[in-house]
Image (tube, rainbow, N blue to C red; front, side, top):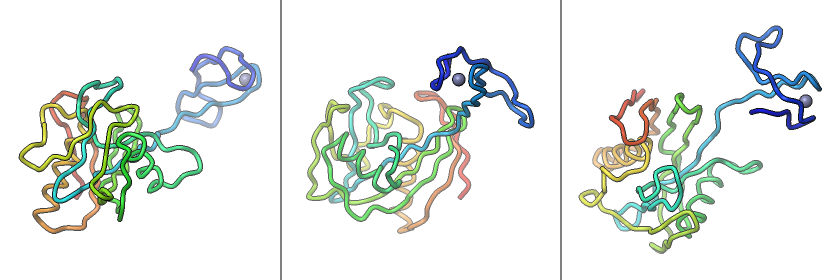
Length: 188
Ligand SMILES: [Zn+2]
């Protein structure tokens, strides 16, 4: 953040009175521009025992496989956001969405809320941010070509949960960078 969105004055980084960490402060209008974590919502959609993945047509991680997911929009609920991402990235309608995993990504100040659901009619095709969509069974998952650690963790949990016939909602902290060794603390 360089300039104040209110008055275009150059911002400075300092600790405001009564606070305990640095903020972007405007010396023009005295506004304090707080930066807080962002919510990312996504879904893992299943059709006849297979999982829907999308090959990314955008950076970061162009050409790698991901679950439909993205930043929440204002005025929507987390479930609406997850359904919207499936529609935008995979032209897919989702049914029976249920919360499945909450993932803290403190390194990049994001919180992921992942839903599990059914892919309506088994239909999907590439949306604007997607090169290709495909349904994978467990043996076919391209583990080395997954875009983000949160996608790896969501898929691993999905297959575990399926085996255990569990309905548990998982909470985990993910600190690894994309493409590097997984660094995950599972809380349940
Ligand atoms: Zn200002």
